[in-house]
Length: 286
Image (cartoon, rainbow, N blue to C red; front, side, top):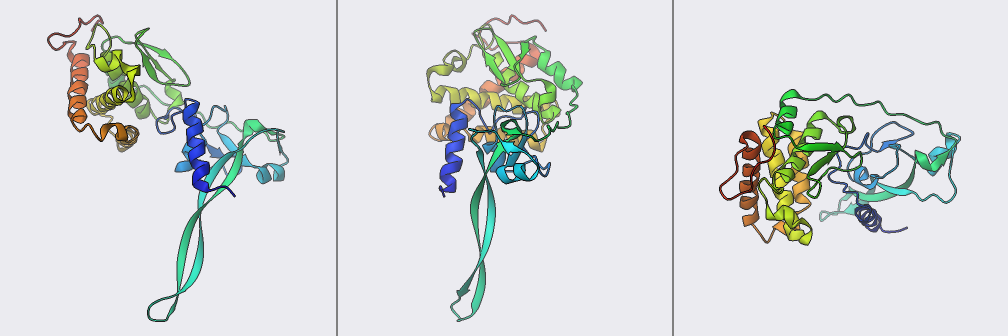
């Protein structure tokens, strides 16, 4: 059997090579879910099963067989891991026999419903996220152009547009606005507004990207607080996202202060329309 850590590492690297960022994807229609039990997978398995399949449901080879289905020929499965336990007898220093539990990781291979035949399709319950008026007004205040991309959230300087999945694709309304504010902070750094070097030079290296991403995530946290959306979940997501850039930030402690200053400038521009001296001219309407 392959080493479980090798399996997990390989799967995450595969996702990254495919452009899937598992630690920042709160807009999947539904989390990866067991077809057999209807329970969503937790922890590392949520990351391992991020994919481009339309169905959120996953099943093992044996489960599919028991339910009258089969795995399509040539399909490759995805690993999930779980913690198992065994009890070992040991003799302690006093010569007494004691039981010591030993925990270890094992993995199964699962297949998405789209890789099967003969299993009825399951449709998850649709989310009914609602716009939050105050948060929506803050997002739209400077008139950014926002378009839909059901797969990704990003700001494109060339078109000067923000692209977001739809509101109902997110885990919650708060998750939608937290992501939207992240991209809005990127947008404030575009030409004609704050003109941040980390936007114009974004693709010149990981150090530049790290600085801009830190600024955007701090801006999102500021916006969430202003819009009364600073829930424990949005803050947890922000922390996880920032941690993904930590190795590029560790040798640059001053970046945090710089990012905080830039994020504050972004928020003040959205709130007031005013730019710091020497910056570009605001073109958006209030």
